[in-house]
Image (cartoon, rainbow, N blue to C red; front, side, top):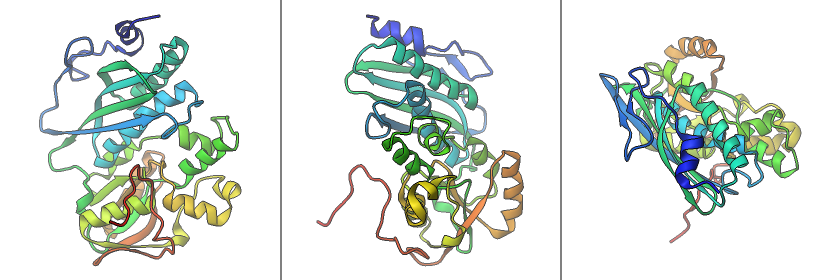
Amino acid sequence: MPSEFELIARYFVQRNEGESTGVALGAGDDCALLVPSSGQQLAVSVDTSVVDVHFPAQAPAWAVGYRALAVSLSDLAAMGARARWCTMAVTLPEADEAWIEAFSQGFHALCAESGISLVGGDVTRGGLSISVTVHGEVPAGAALCRNGGKAGDIVAVTGPLGGGHGGLVAWQQGMRDLADPLLSRYLLPKPRLSAGLVLRGLANCAIDISDGLLADLNHLCEASHLGAELDMERLPLATGLEDLLGGEGARHAALCGGDDYELLFSLPEAFLTEAQRRLRECSLDLWPIGRLHAGAGITGVDEIAASGWQHFPGGAS
């Protein structure tokens, strides 16, 4: 059985030092040494993926590795940051090299897709979980924060919703083909990094949809001290969602299901056409779904009592 350090060296060390990557010293020492670009602020976020909470125990190892990085990169996308570096701490029940190799291949595949370098981490023994910390760069003052929304802004998303929840249901019903559009949305989510970059200077606020549209829109509204009105007729639904869940179930999934990892943002109406043009160049769409307004709360939907995913939902005290 390989040791912890043999596993790290064999599957997780990338030789990526160099000026072009901003890595002065990568994995293998007590710390990585990184060189941020001049005039940039660092954007840092961490996410933990736990077996049978965030992904099924029987999910393909390649998809688990890809997904663990994708959900963290989505936070950089929401800030309009360019992905640069990441670290990963993985806890494994056993040193199953076939599983670890496939897992690392999925993780490294998304590293290559997104231009990010793995610069360190840790391997321990225990229940399966993966914690990924991502580091990105954004020009000083250009980050897309949650608190910048303005009354009158259009609320929009970068793609159809409900696919993450629909994919989970499809998995629970026995679907295993990752080519299925819903299952792919759940197990192989695409962080909208390019969208975050092109929305800088146009969007006033942004967030990625991880906990569900209503929950994450509420985060934007609270941070911006505004309310929002949704137009349910314009809510884009993921391909195949209504066939799987029916009309009402599909709308509920889009509002509350989570795991979509599309960007939710607001922008002035005057910037709408330019934002649509820029997103089309990234092979993405812009879907207006409502407006921000003075006041509080979310209107236009009859499911306000429903909330998105929370690990520790609050209750009456």
